[in-house]
Amino acid sequence: MNTGGSIGIGLRHAHYGELIETRPVLGFVEVHSENFFAEGGAARAVLAEARALYPVSLHGVGLSLGAAAGLDPWHLDRLARLVEATDPVRVSDHASFARAAPLGAGPVLHANDLLPVAFTEASLAIMAANVAQVQDRLRRPILVENLSAYVAWSDQYMDEPEFFNALARRTGCGLLLDVNNLVVNALNDGVEPVRAACDWIDRLDAAPVGEIHLAGYCDLGDIVIDDHGSRVHAPVWDVYRHAVRRLGPVPTLIEWDTDVPALAVLLDEARQAERIQAAVR
Image (tube, rainbow, N blue to C red):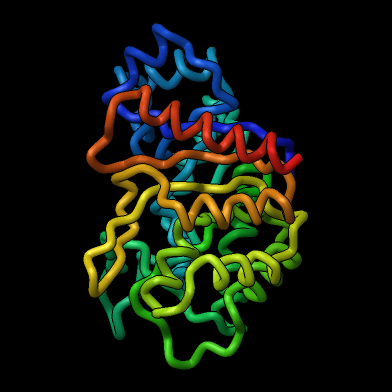
């Protein structure tokens, strides 16, 4: 799944005009799929302009791959249409659920959040079936991202890397390794973050990893929030160096979703990732 090293940034509304006008050197740009589901209009026009300049990666938050209630047919259809129109270099979503069927009669309930799944054989079977359905509809493999989670299920018996390894083997999907999420989870678990995150990566099969995400987090003292609202923190860079040594120059995204700064700041972060990839080779 590793397609070689390239560094990208998230394409955000504040940077549309400047990025298309200045055309900075980037390996790819990534957008949130759901923001472009509506066909036609200004958003799709900007995406088409960006696609003419760069490879585009589609990263979703709404597939609900871990939902026992199954996938939302409307959502999957809209994603398939966007994939057909955009021909993205990668398509990804999260190892989470946001849909649940109530006990008894009633419509499926939707949560406005990425809720964690239990790392059990039952959850694995559900996610594998949903991933297979998405891949059949899109006619391509997708990447599945590890989550930053603030709660955990009491009955899980697989460790997280084992779960992802099994998912990739069963479905042929790729993996999106979010290094920031590993560090956030370790900090919230009260363990040394660099060592814990590097150990996590060492237990992961290397071949399916098709993209890496880097971002900033917010340390509130009693909890660390994965807010994507600042520069990449030092522990995340340290873990990224280890990831590149073990996995190779995997395509890497700088994520920044809140308090979005000037485009030059994102490009500076991208250059740092490039320097790390070059130094490790």
